Image (cartoon, rainbow, N blue to C red; front, side):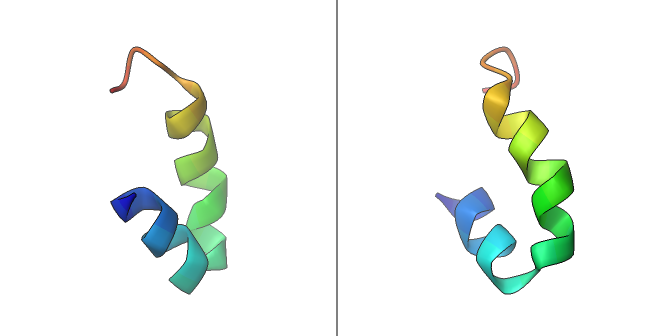
Length: 27
């Protein structure tokens, strides 16, 4: 949820957050 908020406020971080969210091992 926090990552989603950061992505919404900073579109540039979306590139970094999306791969992390797609990686189940990260969470």
